[in-house]
Length: 383
DNA sequence: GATCCGTGGGC
DNA sequence: TGCCCAAGGAT
Image (cartoon, rainbow, N blue to C red):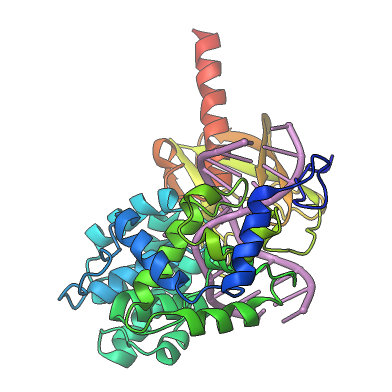
C-alpha cells in the first residue's frame, strides 16, 4: 500500500495551505534561496553540535596533534554506510589498540579482520590496512592534506577525501554524503533523481560554503540531517533554514531526494558445516575478494543453488536454519553438525568451541550461536 | 552507470 | 513484518 502523503496546496479541499502560501510569498519577495542560509546553519550548528570522539567542536582550532588526521580518517572509513552508534565502540577499540597510522600499518592482517568483525563491508577493513601501509610507505607516516592525494589512497573516495581534508586539515573541501544530499535536494526541491542530481548539489554547495568553515559547514549539514531534516517526517518547525527551503514550500519535503526504484532482493539457500573434535571446531578463511572476503567462516557450500556436498561423510545432525539479509540478497543457511573423536585432515583453522563465535561476521556468529544453543538443549534434556 | 558489498535500528 | 535507511567505494 502506498504511503499517503500530503501534497500541499493543490491536494487539499479545505484547501488553503496558509503556511505554504506565506512561505511562497516570502520566497517571491526575497528570492528563491536566501544567501544567508549557510550562516544561519553555522549559527545553529554552534548551538546544537553533537559531541563525537572524532569531531572538533564548532569554531575551534584543529587540535595540535599529528595523529588527528589519522583519527578523522579512521572514523570516516568506519562511518561509511554505518551509523554513529554502530561505529563508536569500534573507533574506541581501534584507537586504543592502534593509536597511530604507523601502528595500524604494522599490525597483523588477521588481527585487523577479527577486530573489524561485525561491522560489515569487510572490503573497508582490507582497504584500511592497505591505506595505512601506503601512508607509511608513500607519505612518511603522515596523511596528505590535499584531496587529490587522499583520493588516490585505497578505500578513500570522493566523500572521504573531502571529509579528511576538511575535518582533519581544515581545508575548504566540499563534503557530500547521503545526509548532505537529502538536505540540499530539499532546500532546492531538486526533482532530478539521484545520482543525477549530484552535479547540482555540488555546484550549490561550492557557492554556498563559507570560506574557512568547510568542516563546520559540512558537519552542521550532517547534524541537521540527523536531528531535523530526517528521511521521514522532517521537523521543519525546528529548522534554521526552513524559510529558504523550496522543498518545504512544495508541502512534501519528505519526497526529496528522488531515488530510483529498488529491486527486490532474491532468496538464496546454502549449508554450513560445524565439524567438532577434541573441543575444537574447524573454521576456514574466505577468499580475499567478494562476499565476506578475508573473514573467518564455517565451511559452507556456495549459496547459488548448487548441491550441498559436505566436506566429510558422516552422521550429520541438523542444527536448524539461520536467516540473514545481505545488501542484495537474503540467505537461509542450513547448519549441520558432525562430532568426531579425532580431528580429521582438513584445510582450515581449528579453534576452541567456546571462542568460535568471536571474530566472525554476523552470519556465522549466528550459526555458531545456533549450534551452541542446540548443544545446551541436548545437555538439558539429557540431565 | 550498474552492481556488489553487511549490519542494526526505526517505524 | 517488511522496508527503508546510515558520514560510500571498488569494479
